Length: 326
Ligand code: DGY
Image (cartoon, rainbow, N blue to C red; front, side, top):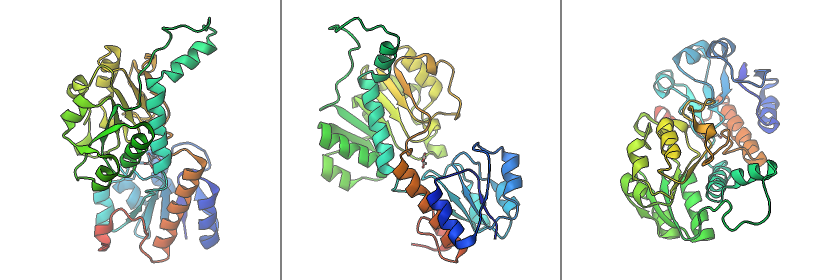
């Protein structure tokens, strides 16, 4: 049995796999594999535990070959995987929903506060030894309590952010989603609106949609221009949902108050100009980076892989339709 792990993950999940099938074959360097390396390393694998940074396309699947049962993605997002290719080959795709909701929503909220209260700028100011005593006009920011929060994509994470911010800070909630979210409406009095209304009326905007061709540049220059001058936009979903070049322009020209970004259009790169701006807080895709979430993700990804290898359908199977699962 060959089980290939494309990058080190918390030991808990690896131990679960080792207990069942013995030693795993793992990328020894803690770095993203080049596509050619990935193709080479998965050769003949029965199962692959992969990362959102691995492009899992037909070439990778064909290299693993007909013995391969599953690509178990160590992430909830699966936009790195070619589903048509997986479905054609009847390869299962697993993911890790739910266990990272709290971690990711907490990061989105942290970004909102950091931008609103200019925490990173203030920290830099102190480290630069610029503080000369209390100043009535120093580093004024935006209030959070009672403001309007627009959630783009009211799935698990969007819903969690809205509930926390409504309960904790009395925020009014607007949301966009393909479907209505009655639970969210009951809990928070949230109103489903169209995207342009959300952009025009929100003080805080949180991007929480999956990345598909349909959500590419959902936030573009035109939508940024609709936003309020005090608006703060936070993206903890996927970078390409926001047109990053347009965002840089909006931040440079102060169309909006600021942005908090955990994800970038061409990760790990940033668009020119972004890092020079004071009105953006940028962090390196750490939404799920708590010890608890990452450990649970490792257990879940391992369990998906074990189930597939032992002939069961994994609980967190993304391409259910191919396997006739309701
Ligand atoms: C995911 O799971 O999709 C996050 O982006 C990383 O944990």
